[in-house]
Image (cartoon, rainbow, N blue to C red; front, side, top):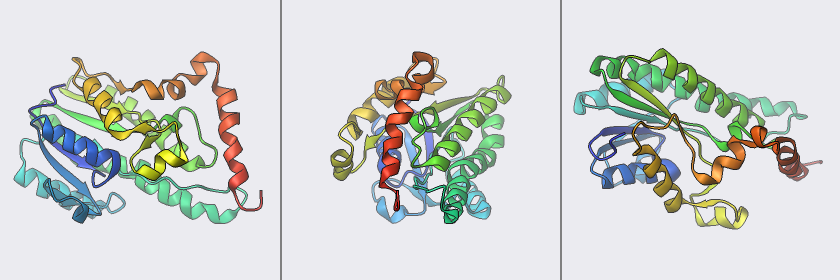
Length: 247
């Protein structure tokens, strides 16, 4: 896809990977609007308030963005929460419901809000954001894994339903990325944010756009079943369950 002359809305772009992606699209020459609940964090790009758990908020944001940017042709939906859960403790259900409402239903609602616009243009791109954990679960975050696996399946179905409309669907699959300095201390294997964004932009710039944007660091997650390493890696990641209270 052309990354230098687009009009891009990044929902969930007020920090971390989303904000870095927004700034890189802008640096490439695209017009970028950042959406989220903490827009005060962003002072260098246009913003729009949006809460993906609130359907009315999404529609207000859509109308505002399309009024000021009727040529919008890229929608990135990446709002998400990562919550640990102890499935032996029934109180985990609150975390599970919050995760599904934000990660999965929020993604679906944002896509639904902009589908008619992109189809009417006859061209455009949806970029969904999943996770390596969608393909290689981290048992400490079970509903997060399920929500991202759901977004992957939804992206696959959306791509097929939009065939022939001119609207493409790309799925960005991040591994662990150090969006703050302390992340690197907690996980030495986390990718450097700038290096990750470099790879992502290079992959997005390919023609045709890949269906899945897979940086090298996520291949071990994405292809674990194919490579026969799935069971071993899940068992290794399950060691983190020992950190739950009472375990």
